[in-house]
Image (cartoon, rainbow, N blue to C red):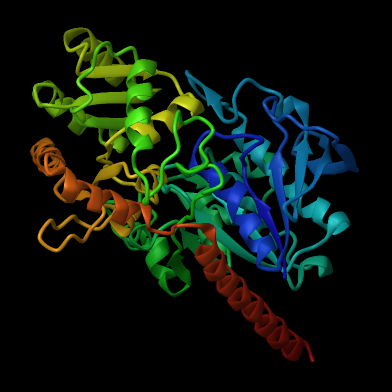
Amino acid sequence: MHIVFAASECVPFSKTGGLADVVGALPRALAAAGHQVSVYVPRYRQTKLTDSRTVVRSITVPFDDHYRFCSVVSAGSKAGVEHYFVEYPPFFDRDALYGTSTGDYPDNAERFALFSRAVLEASKILGVPQIFHCHDWQSALIPVLLKTQYAEDPAFQEAGTVFTIHNMGYQGLFPPDTLPLLTLPWDLLTMSKMEFYGNVNFLKGGLVFSDFITTVSRKYSQEIQTAEFGFGLEGVLRDRASTVTGILNGVDYDEWSPQTDKFASARFSPQDLSGKAKCKQDLLAAFGVTNPDLRLPVIGIVSRFAAQKGFDLIAQIMDRLAREEMIVVALGNGDKQYEEMFARLQKQFPQKIAVKIAYDNAIAHKIEAGSDMFLMPSKYEPCGLNQIYSLKYGTVPIVRATGGLDDTIEPWDARTGRGTGFKFTDYNGEALLLTIKDALKAFRDQASWQTLMRNGMNKDFSWNNSAKEYGRIYERVRQLRATHNATQAVATV
């Protein structure tokens, strides 16, 4: 089956979060399973290509004021996946993907509308797929367009759509006059289509018009159908519950494995854990912790510093946690109040708290390899990848039981020797602190702790199983389209 992925980012070409990892890895797993896969992403300033060639010289995209003309560039085939880049420098040759520290780019609706139309038009030349697999609001206009302005286009009569929600918190909200600007019909501005409290909601359009909806964990697919996690779209999802499912993200063990990690100072495995101690020493040196007591457990954090990630809870307990027998190393950036909190604590407890306000891939690997525990107390977490990376490195996760964190981490039971980490449910600082203390207590029994480490290291969250589940969804959508087309043909006779 031919599948086209349309997304706003993809490793190794562009990245701001886990979406890029998924769009980089899942197509490779699908190609390995025998599917033909093409990936379309914008060509940003940060996109570095070698041996690229223009495969579609000019695509005309209408806007209300004038036409814009973009092109499509190919980076060739890698691991059986074709990568195409929509090139339009006025929209994509910018410092960042979506906006600056002052906010989103004001023309994001135009930017990603152009991208969506370009994917459809380019596919007519480069190959129309059986399935367009669209990701998040930036590509949500593709299913909208296919069911409206392109509904009579014979090229797409057999093409179905799968829409994946990576985070319900980002929806693509724009004022109503966005519709005529993008030459979209006014009748989309209704409650049953794209209207959302007087605005145009791109994500809602994707949910309403796609053939099937997936999200990135089983638990999150249930949570987003509730008022707490649905961000106002829970009713839309409940209406479509029969076509909503959760498929857990996989991880790329070629990049995230203690047996091959190029950033780790030593290699280790479930059979030989001795290299982890050297990784721990190297990690603390990288954070400038002088003369550390290596017997103390190290708790690692790699995250965007934001309340959604649980940093409001961390702020509640951090002064008390710093007095425990442990060391915290944190890498990330985000909300100023949390950056300042870590800076203050590092000055106050230089042997206990170490922080780097940045994102650094090499340091992220060192944290996974050298930490004893990994902290993810998220308010909500659609899937989460770091807790899965942590399992492979024997770095025991401490998580809140939400979304993919709940699906991937099994509570540790020292009596039976089963489990892979520590979980809490109630979203408050006391529950978090109690759970961390439970983990610190468990760490004192090193024989038992090594059983816990190995339990996690032996788990397999590779993309193979997830790719098979997506394959079944694609086949279901293809059959739905075939049934629809047959019904339409009978109706016209």
